[in-house]
Image (cartoon, rainbow, N blue to C red; front, side, top):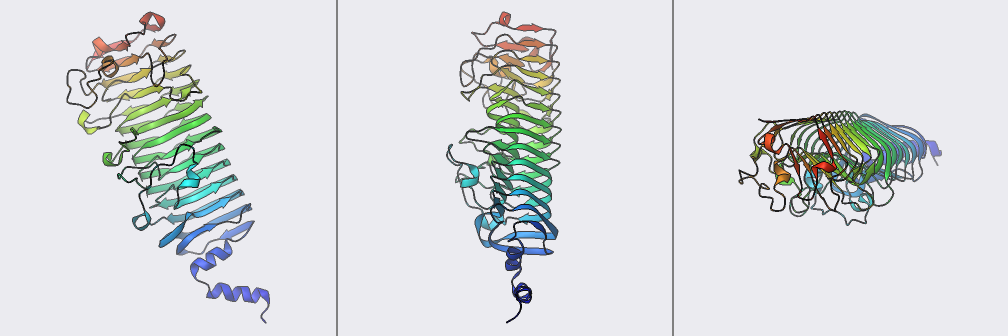
Length: 443
């Protein structure tokens, strides 16, 4: 009988590339150098549960899902600690493997629901992804559930995400951290042609915490470029995006999923959105649904087209209070530049906000209410919502009249802005807010 070491060598020589790959990745710790070339997989590769202090490095290596691929992800790990993945490419073979999939029920984690993801880590700690390329992924390119100390740097994702039975995006395609993930960074990544959200956090119960989403680049995103969902202490800075909400045919119309440059969901506090720039947004610039006790500073959103170019065009910055655990309060919105909105610039509810030194131009491209050709111009309850530069409202999802807010030194220009620079809901009093030093002009 051959010695064990020689037998092992013989088996490796005779194994297929996929079998060889599975053998070298069946390790708990150490360093693995992947073979060069494209390796086609019939099913996902799961690292051993609890693998730790493991580095996996590619060598011009591509892991590709075969036409009969089955599995939660190309590469996954549960309960791993201190895992580093470097210099590999992953091809999810979306053309052959994509199937219509609806969004999961509200009580279900995305990691338990979606399959054919790129990289999947659950209950993991100390995950580093560097110089990884993912393309044609039917599910999520990267999905981290209940992960801690996560570093995702210089990851490129393209042509990814699937659709539901109505051929609308189902939120997939990008990078998702969910279920109480904490101490995370997603930096220097490039996301292009993503059907769903680009980079986002989501959680059913425990909030995500202590994250940085910085210096990433987005183009042709079907849902949100960035979404901060149910989180605390997240900094979103220095990101760039182009063509958010395109192609319009894949927007999730039935779910009213308006595309957003930076979206918010759930209960989000002590967070900052600063120094981000988005161009050509078929939706909203920044949605603050659930956002409170935080700051939105020095962001730029520019649309240069005609109102009909933005089928889902909206107000640019919008407060909301759908989550019952929060109240819209103490938000600073300052130094932002907004140019080219289909309707108004800022929708305000709640109290304790400071809105100052914003430069708002080319507002109300739809010429509401005079021009009723554009969807949404005829707003039966409060027509001032759409035609005002800054609108102080009485409610969003729940009553929250705008009071005790400071609106000062904003430059507001656009269609009818001299007359409708700052608007008020019928039950909201201008005297209940401090308003001064704003410049209003028609344009």
